[in-house]
Image (tube, rainbow, N blue to C red; front, side, top):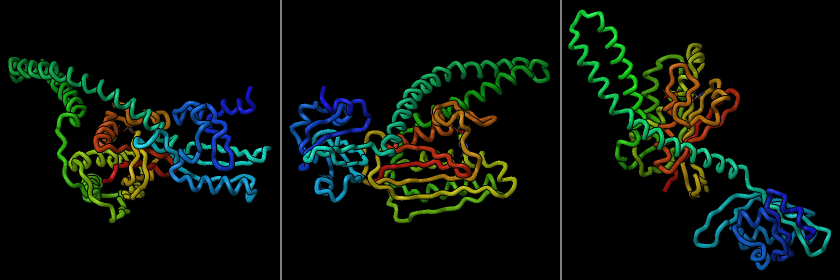
Length: 353
Ligand SMILES: Nc1ncnc2c1ncn2[C@@H]1O[C@H](COP(=O)(O)OP(=O)(O)OP(=O)(O)O)[C@@H](O)[C@H]1O
Ligand SMILES: [Mg+2]
């Protein structure tokens, strides 16, 4: 058994290298992540996987020269061969070994990457439930129309003054409610995207004024805009709808604070660089945060938040976030949520050209 075999049990990528970076041993995680056989790895230089190999070589030299017994730095690795680069962030740790001309390089996937993977998994789940919901909504729509029509005819037939009208009214009312639900479920799929130049701050301002009309008192919506953000191609009306859902949720969660006049929502925009969304990496993206000082998302629904029909609110349908996620995904972006005590932060990330 090789002395390095225990490295195979680690989730961390480990390579044993010569001071010039030549790979002597790569562990199973390394092999896995970089999609190559160990024998293939052993012929190569570790620097080949680094976007900035100089940093690696400098550090190897420094550790070898005993400037430091060990050193760490952040780096980006490429998973596949050029030109189909798939980059990921790692924390690199270089240490000396007992042998003079061998160094150990550990590469831990950065937490951001881990988070994105989690998001990606949940996006996959959202995607499959989306299809289910859409098909179901279609199936409900037609019989529902028939039901509603028949109840209305029956009401006519009964004539005004009939005691039985009470029952037809219940049918019509409930069928109406279902119709609205089904229409909302189908809404983002029905409309063809109307793509134009979108100014994100125009979107924010529209939503801000809409929500303030609903809550003229007790709620402050603060703006914190990065006005250097460029316009991008997108469907303005749909994005307004998505953001409106987030801000309305925040306002609903803030009901007690609104009563006390202490409710605050912040709309914050920022530029983000080198962002991974789903599987793709973007040089530039915009972040739009909706922060509120409410109680936060109930713990029991946090990991299913974007699923359709998941609600933590009396009278909620649980569609708002699902629809918002659908719209943002159609723009190749994603929404995630960070819960801190006293601060709930929903973040929309959208790639920029
Ligand atoms: N800012 C927030 N603070 C606290 N909880 C939130 C916040 N945003 C969403 N939630 C929780 O997430 C749940 C799901 O939100 P979502 O918008 O999908 O559905 P809903 O608001 O319940 O119903 P709908 O939007 O369809 O009317 C909410 O019911 C609420 O419990
Ligand atoms: Mg909602």
